[in-house]
Image 1: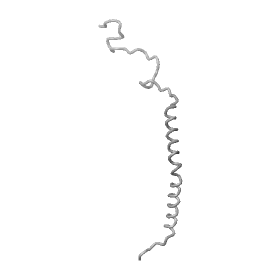
Image 2 (image 1 turned 90 degrees about the vertical axis):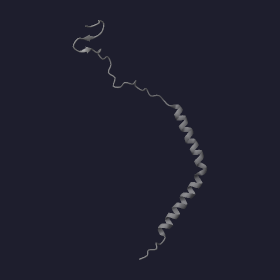
Image 3 (image 1 turned 180 degrees about the vertical axis):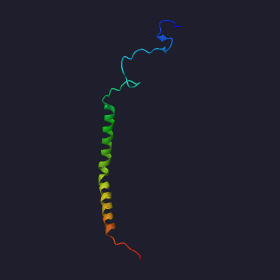
Image 4 (image 1 turned 135 degrees about the vertical axis):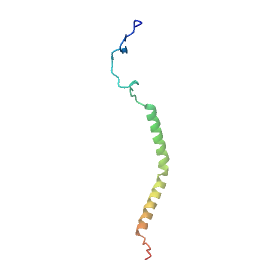
Amino acid sequence: MSSGGSDETEDEGVVPAPVRKVVRTVTPSYRGRPDTEMTTIGIAYGLGLVVLLIPLLPFIVVVWVVSKITGFLARKAPTDRVR
């Protein structure tokens, strides 16, 4: 009892059309492109950090040196052990 024009058989129902191209995903493939906008933002961010850190560099070095000296003196100091 086919209405004509469709690919139906009485035993199997609708017969799918043959596959023309095999695609392993349902979404279209991604074609990469250069992302110059994000590169520009990243470079600007990096330059901003450099501009902020260069004036702070002497203070960072002083804190690092003081921490190394205090650590060295703490290892050399005698410990008071009560027996």
